[in-house]
Image 1 (cartoon, rainbow, N blue to C red):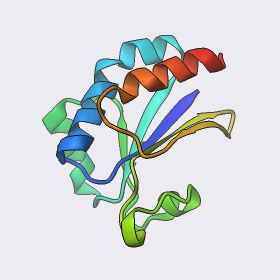
Image 2: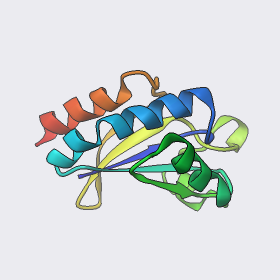
Image 3: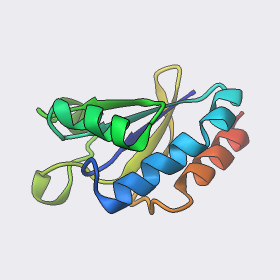
Image 4: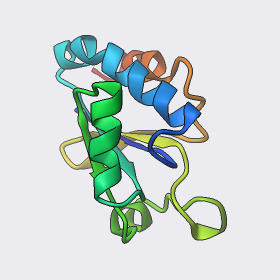
Length: 118
């Protein structure tokens, strides 16, 4: 199972909280055979700096041309950036979508959803 979490911008308060929470729960996610990937519209350099600053142990992707963001219909305000949404994906199928995510506690919410799906 995979979790693709879209977030508005590297190094902003909410995105930092959410990323650190996913990072904190990586062992439990791995024990559930789940992987986390973060996606933002930031340029190619930004995610690397964000990973380093927060010591993140999961993959962050830059979607600066919005191809993935558009594919998920995840455009942000006025079509700029992305919303804070998470998609649980298994075998290429979206099993659950979390919209308008609140950063605090979201990792635990995702873990509970994965447990209920298995």
